[in-house]
Amino acid sequence: MSLTLSTDTARGSPALSPVGRSRPAEPVVRRLARLAPLAAEDVALLESVAARRERHERNAELNRQGERAFTPRMVLSGWAARVRTLPDGRRQILSLLLPGDVTGLTTGPSPLSLAPTVALTPAHTAEATPLFEALTRRRADHPALARAVELAAAAEVAGLMDHVTRLGRMSAYERTLHWLLELYTRLKRAGLAEAGRCRLPLTQDVMADVLGVSVVHLNRTLRQLKGDDLVRLEVGRLTLPDIDKAAGVCGFDRGR
Amino acid sequence: MSLTLSTDTARGSPALSPVGRSRPAEPVVRRLARLAPLAAEDVALLESVAARRERHERNAELNRQGERAFTPRMVLSGWAARVRTLPDGRRQILSLLLPGDVTGLTTGPSPLSLAPTVALTPAHTAEATPLFEALTRRRADHPALARAVELAAAAEVAGLMDHVTRLGRMSAYERTLHWLLELYTRLKRAGLAEAGRCRLPLTQDVMADVLGVSVVHLNRTLRQLKGDDLVRLEVGRLTLPDIDKAAGVCGFDRGR
DNA sequence: CGTAAGCTTGACAATACTCAATCTCTGTGG
DNA sequence: CCACAGAGATTGAGTATTGTCAAGCTTACG
Image (cartoon, rainbow over all chains, first blue to last red; front, side):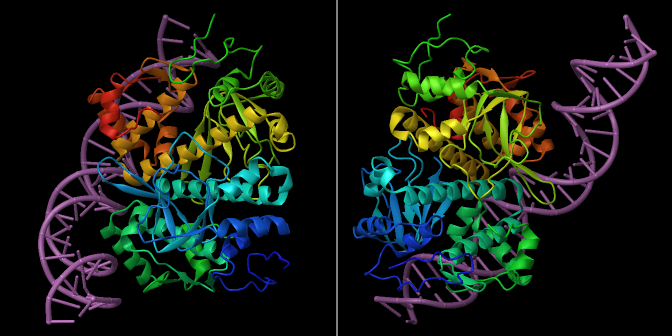
């Protein structure tokens, strides 16, 4: 199998087989392959790690009891989130993990517990310690993989920075729209969105905890966005009728 | 003078000479040495990198024109900040860089521009590309250094997560106090604070941009904190009269 | 049908922002 | 030594944004 790396718009994307039991690592491969040209061994390594897939119910913690908070892990399917909870119960979602995402790879076992990870939908993940080992002890054997993971980690940091900016300096209206655009962009890049449409399997409760607003206010904000026809929401789907217009409204920087 | 490295976890750390021209890398060495037991070569490498120190005026961008946004860099003295600016001029400070901090090391040259870095006080820094090289090409020769840098990067991510939580789920009052506590803790660990006191060479303008509030509101919030005697502010100094009490008020988790 | 989860709305309160002064330093030129 | 300028801190008044509480509503599903 040869992986032609696609660009943003997926022209020339290889015909990858649909996600399924046969190739559980596919989203991960797709994600990393666009960051650096993976070697066949790299792909094989990813597949072997993904073979140890685990299933999680909605709301289940991905880290098994006793597992270090930041154990390397790859998301094969479903959506998850890293969550902080304040002593009095307030909850903040720090970032979403979408299919293809890998975390905890640059950090390694760390003394500081960063944040527990929770499945927001039923999900499949795989513990990726072997991958971490490969990137530390046998790093020289996997230069492209190492590079790809490095870039993925940088993207994760960039995502946190974006979120800080949203929470610190944007109104709820801008913030919500900006976040939806980012989500769409991410899914698009992962090959999980078509023109202006993608899945959005999140309750308003969860979205409110991402965006740092109350559910009530989020609901009103979404209503406003719908009224301005910047956003359409059906059951588990999001539609962005005019992405350029939306990007203009909230200062979203396309081309990332 | 002998530097007894303060309490936290500093047992067995090497005795370091005071900060000065002779050992510009000292804050960096101190910072990393507490994360992993650096070898003599590691320290030598850090010193050699630090020898190429550059001076920056307040408000100067640390990244020289044309330099990649996330070029590896170490802060030798002074305070700096990573900054995002929205199209309409609103500004959010993402994180502070204190003496001893290193950034851009795990990422390497990245296609995405994360955020420009600006000096908040007159500062000395050094471009740390050689360090980055050592950690990639000759990583096997510097295991402890690699580990220390890894942990420092994890701490940076943890810091961003803390900030997301502050901005998303805490009131301005809690948020301000929580941030001041974190700042104090960081400085304390770096050996730059005594019991309950540390420098705070930031204008309220800057603090407001860190905390995502208006200057006016920050001012009132600080006033309230002073009124409750949780915080005292003199010229460029911060005093926390009762850290435990303060930590309780804002849910700050000591012991990090 | 009946239930439970999730969504929507109204009414009201608290939090935070903007605008526009005023005040307090600190350093500078005369 | 003093008046003055400029940066930064502080305050008041009015407004906008967002939160809380308490209902209803809708939908999926047993």
